[in-house]
Image (cartoon, rainbow, N blue to C red; front, side, top):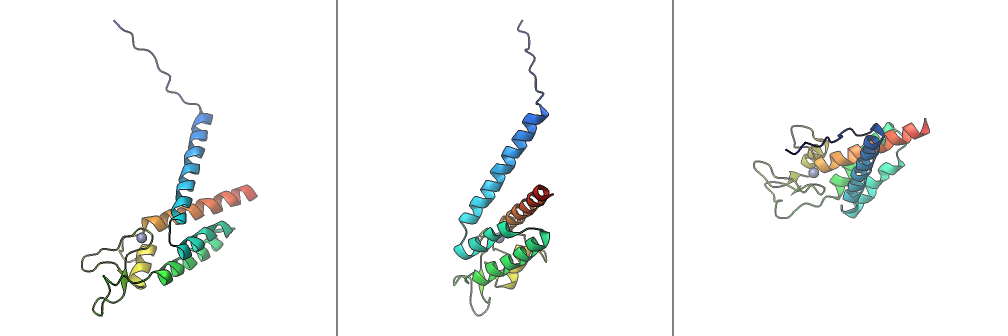
Length: 145
Ligand SMILES: [Zn+2]
């Protein structure tokens, strides 16, 4: 009869920390890559998270980003008419369908989607950007301490 070989599943704490750091780095790079494939004006604005020194800066960056995204989103002629008003899908996640109309109303519906307010399905791509900037500021502050 074959004996079962004992496998040591114990992983050193150091190896786990290294793996976590590696995964964190990969996630950060994937989020940075997302910014690179966004429309230029939005991409330029979102990259400014790198200028944030603290969470107050980050909040300012967040509101400026909402403004740039909503201001630069062009109404989709397919979804927009005198009855529905100006509408467009989210330029980040391309979402925008709701029960009655295609796209989000501009700028208010899109802004609600980006903020995740008023029951609007929150934009998961902008949430990544928020987390990217949060992690960046946290790391920056811990390095400065
Ligand atoms: Zn979105």
